[in-house]
Length: 115
Length: 109
Image (cartoon, rainbow over all chains, first blue to last red):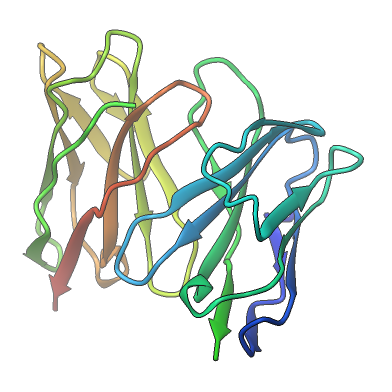
């Protein structure tokens, strides 16, 4: 079974440019997460979806970040415009909504460098 | 989510057991204890989770203190491939997890 797929793996852009990251979760997983990971830090939750509904976006900087999961399957995270401080790894994860199961499945991440 | 405290780093020798401690004194009665690990340039990987009883799986064992204020992840025989950052997380059952800085495990050949 395929895992969580993210693209691109690496992206280098200049500040003020837009950038988008795509995530395809594991088939059948209703819950999808976007995390941000700065160098040397643990991942921080940006947004969590249950199907197509964003149920927790309190940590998403809404002035420049947006996300969508239109059909409740794959998802896109966008930054516009990017700032130097946005350089980080953006991780997507999915999980089946199953009581008692705490397992999140992560993709390999998209590493963003803003110059 | 419960605040957790882990040592910044630990070292082990290959084929020896490793005990990674975690304190979570503010954990609520319904919070699970989750462990993930992250290898270089990879996303985090699930290791194990539990609520009250000790848990075993093919990767590791999780020993939970009776008062649930601490737990220990046990790797029974460390290999070089176990070198990673290990995260202990106290949180809800199905996955809203707050990661800390974790413990960097170094395994020496």
